[in-house]
Length: 336
Image (cartoon, rainbow, N blue to C red; front, side, top):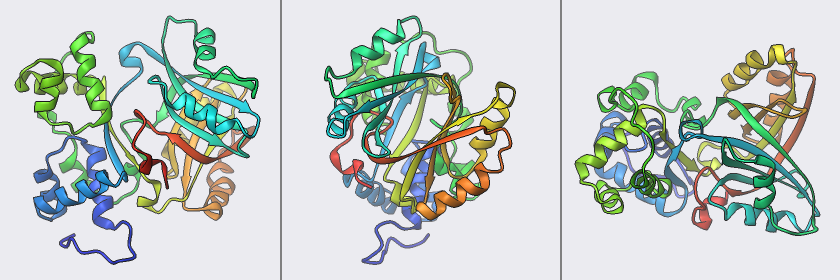
């Protein structure tokens, strides 16, 4: 990876993918450390990052783990009349407490993830989030009981773009991770997290201005929040950076005695970007990313077919992504 040159017809190259992998490992890694590991100059890394970010191809986001902040995640499925799916999805996407909002299947279903304080009445809360329209004909909600893969782990980490030695050198240094709990979140913590949710690489000066802290205090608080898992960094990206063209949601049903083993087996599949155990008739959900329809068929008839405990499977291709893991991005990132 010695050159910043690229062919006129190549949208993304190996250096782009290596940079994305590096940022998934440590969203706030200095460009100098990334450049050293990738064997290019600091300026090359800075140019590539700026291009990817300003064109909407990637965003580095600082996000919170739901359990660490006393929240529960719910997967919501909304059945709509055909002309209502996109408006409903857009209304859900505008909410600060939703993520991963998609239009599925034949354009009559919207899927979204939402978070609620664990003590709240979940049914009333979910209903209040939906647009008031007769074109919504059905709603189901499934509580996320356990996450097998996703979040800070990231599908990029399965790509193999970086070798194990490079990945180890780019992982967040242990010295930056103080021991002990950072304590409950304060109002200033939430100001800090609000900035990071939009830009995980926001400069210390910007974070200090938002919180009223010194830069050294910001640095210590960031390290503490990362150390106990409250704060993690994710790279929201165009799927075509890694040559993927189709994303599908799988709903699987397995006996309770096989749920943990099947969920972990799914998590180990290179195609699986997210996997969790849920409530409801289908107790296992996964998001699968493939190069195309043929690759999806191969995946379903090989890896999924090899899971002996699966009794039922429902597949829902994603037709349109309206919102990703963080706040609504600029429009370009919602394109493939």
